[in-house]
Length: 358
Ligand code: DGL
Image (cartoon, rainbow, N blue to C red; front, side, top):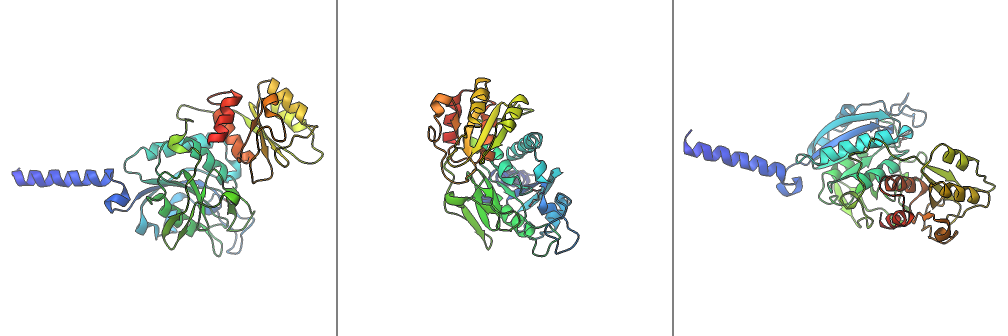
């Protein structure tokens, strides 16, 4: 082969290699975004276009979702995988481990710039925080859902999906941890919660605020998460096939210890107490928590309130009780951090430190 042709082929090969190795935004190429579908309302169908409640979640496959938004092809090289197909109230640890391992495998590939996960909104905040603690990449991971089924008038899924792919392919989202994006708003997985049963504007980050917005195709951030996540996290699920049982006990006026005792008897290794106020412990349940701790069950004091810090040694003497205070983590988020913490330690001081770092 003439020398000049050899050089041209080598140069072409080098350019192709560089193009794949160089991030999309640096190489002026469309980003490679993989959409992992898990079910939910975004894949839901209803009896009519006005059915926005009483529809069936988790009906449409990932290819249908991608085909329903042809505009995706203009902003990213998109490929889809159906990891599982469930209504997210049925999410469990086995699904989480499967999803997290798939995300980590994909993000380790040089030809994947970001991942979008389509998910039911009921537990999207929990899956998001779990992934925030175990994803081993700074590439964007964006979880998206919808509050109206795909068949509904003004279905919010298509634009939510388009925005999520934009974020996942953006340089702005690199290093921001796992993001939950619906209704043009960008939330940190650690802090976001579903705050309305049916409104398209259901997701809130409360006093800690949104990280940014997607507007008119622009991805704009105004702040970054401070707490440790993704590559900064010491939690690793790559070799785990199960996770410790951690349950939540909800606090309320006139409560009792029946549920707590049953959960401990069933083998819970951790209990998160969703107390009233600043994580207050009613006299009816405090002895049960003390007995649980003596049996080796880790106890975290959280609050049902939803905003603010549950302060260590505030409403209870955590030093004396050997309990952990949840800081600003909601009960459902505190459960996730405690579950992963128990895969590495059962030392209360170490776990409290982790609640101050994550
Ligand atoms: N069954 C609920 C879920 O899959 C529907 C809510 C939704 O996805 O918006 O989370």
